[in-house]
Amino acid sequence: MAIDKNKTKDLINGIDELFESFLGGMDKKTQEFLRSKVMGPAYEEIKKLVEDSRPPRIYLMGRSGHGKSSLINALANKEVAETNPVMPTTPESIPYTITFDDVFSCWEIIDSRGIFETTKPNGAVDIDATEFLKNDIIKRKPDIIMHVIAATECRNLSNDLKVFREIQGELKKEDLYIPTLVVLNKADTLGNPREWPPEEKAKKAGIITDLLNYMTDEVLCCEHSNIDLNYSYKGYKVENGVYVGVIPVSSCEGELWNIELLSNYIGENLCDEACLNFFQAQRRRQQLKKLSTSIINRFSTIASGIGASPVPISDILVLTPLQLLMITIIGGLSCRSFTKETAFEYLGAAGINIGAAFGIREIARQAVKLIPFGGWALSGGVAGSTTYMLGKAAEAYFFNGELKSPEEFNEEN
Ligand SMILES: Nc1nc2c(ncn2[C@@H]2O[C@H](COP(=O)(O)OP(=O)(O)OP(=O)(O)O)[C@@H](O)[C@H]2O)c(=O)[nH]1
Ligand SMILES: [Mg+2]
Image (cartoon, rainbow, N blue to C red; front, side, top):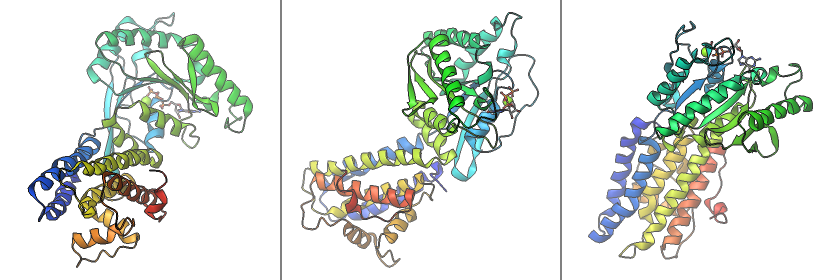
């Protein structure tokens, strides 16, 4: 299970019912304040993360046989059906969707295979192909472009990058900026293929670094910095207004290398709406946890807004629906089911008696005991920090399987 966009409405309706049941007995001004300044912004956050989410649109560029399909299989962590195994004789791009049904996600891939094949004897790319590629990118509007080049062929194919640079110049005129990554595939075949992986073979690591330097210094002509601070051979971040990085990988089945770093880097360059589908499909816990942490921070900020209430709110219980919603999202991001029962599962594990006989008020009363702020006045600071601590404790439970007391996260806030 995971976050299912189609369940968002049910979840929000369920939580909203709880919330409304809290409001009874409060004066109108407080009710209005809580609706518009607490739950309203919380629902807005869910909308941004879940309802606005859409599949990432990934555009593949590169010559036949350099490993575009293998790379997608490596990233998707499964064999993706080839839609058209026959080499096209005229440039055409082939869009297809990869669905990850069990995690409610999908990706849109556009494989521009064949475009660079129509080269002239001198290696120049055909003018029609260039025009086609430009128009195709304008038409498809991908979120990211991956230019896949077999590492051993880089030195012969530098012209392809120059051609693409010109295309990007044209795209800019259309106000279209699409982050583009050079993926140096088949890094394993550089030098002696038996010397592998580079983590264990310094010579291979050196060959890869030399190639990265060549690509950035002589082909792209731009400054670079390590993506992984400790290892230059894992790839460079570049900023030349067109390309965002040069990353070596091996996408050979059974020999995958550096795919996780590539995936993270793609995520860094994707817009917010495309991230959930991209990472959830791969069940990338590290990345999903980052999304969860950002939700915790946002929900804590929303909770602390309670301090600005026109009428002082002394009942910390009013935060329970907000916190249940937050815990459900954290659970969903950790690939649990996206229903409020997930939040109850955590509260149950944390020692709260979630019997069917108890009403939500009782659950709330018990939940408050998880964080002993008894006797404190409910200020914005207290509301924010209790929400934060509860979120972090739920995150530790769902992502790391650790049952920690929320208080342990007090220092961090
Ligand atoms: N050694 C090695 N072989 C690879 C790697 N990636 C792909 N290959 C092999 O290269 C061949 C071509 O890979 P594909 O993924 O089909 O290449 P493609 O770019 O999709 O080719 P077209 O669909 O024809 O455009 C296959 O035999 C792969 O097994 C790699 O990282 N290392
Ligand atoms: Mg292919």
